[in-house]
Image (tube, rainbow, N blue to C red; front, side):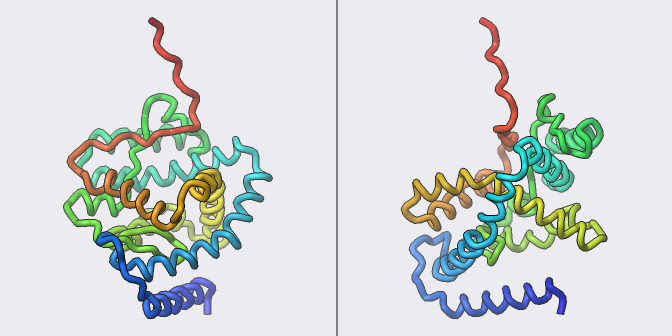
Length: 247
């Protein structure tokens, strides 16, 4: 049995076990499966604390910030390709054109996306996925759902996940070790970037599960459930502040 099939069997078995144990009553109508979700949340937290956090801390300590930024830019440029497709599916010509220009500039001038040249010339990132596309066309988000390993989601975003996975260009790499290495690097780089945010949540939230649920649902409502408003460009915190205009 391959490692991927073994992982799938484990996750399915865990899913069945937790469904059988999900007896805690829901207190929020958006989260009718709260008992199940909390148990999956605890499972995910255990994996994060035992594996992801230590690896991310080691990566952050060993890899210079400029390199980590380049890695993030590289994978961000790859995700912009899928964002372009979804902007087009949502009939957003301006955002589609900007996103396509971003990919062209960052891939060429930005050395395959390692340098985010586009943001520096006022081409903001309009991040879109297939869950947002489904929301644009009127499909409701459905209940909140925590997925094993993958984390917070909704029923709509879970249904969109296989399509989003097909839209990830990293998955198109034919060489298995290279593909797995790239995906592992992406996950570790993302987790390292979220270490500080995790410390803030730990210090501020009385119930971390509820805090993350509210943050996720609020953000997804803003980007996927209000389709008639023009999306705000993604805010960047790794770029120098523009000087104030002279008076």
